[in-house]
Length: 176
Image (cartoon, rainbow, N blue to C red; front, side, top):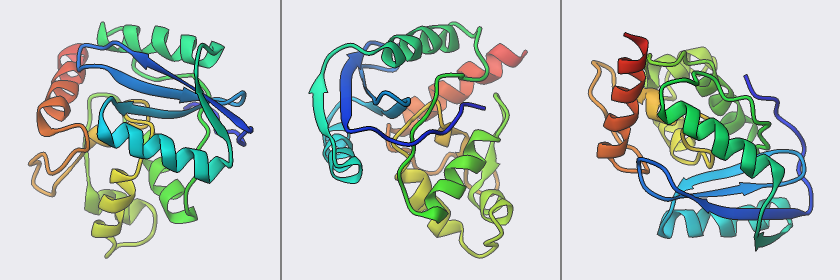
């Protein structure tokens, strides 16, 4: 599981190409703080990060962005099951507990929102888990795509259900 570190005062962002479309990635000197599907949502997340971290945001290169790009390429090739790039999280204690639980979902497996709620000791908080899941700013690495509705239907996904299906299928094929 990637280490979770404290934040710094500058966020470097870069657009990365991927099989699921362009991704907006952000890093501080402590680790990755953003990985979103490029578009309006990533713009909102970038603005939110600037406020949460009280940091300036600038496009550029960063060693953690290079590491993330390498790890994503291996993930999409089916050769990487667990990311090692350090992560920097900012959220409420509940959100961070949900995101921590997402990191525990094994590659190629899924959990329901209710499963995550039970794991964070808030049995009746499936909707709150869904909200925290949707507020995850580090898609793919913090595998919110592995959370499904009770019964196995896909449910929602900030990157769209087609991307969620693609990511889950990629992991299932790589596990065979």
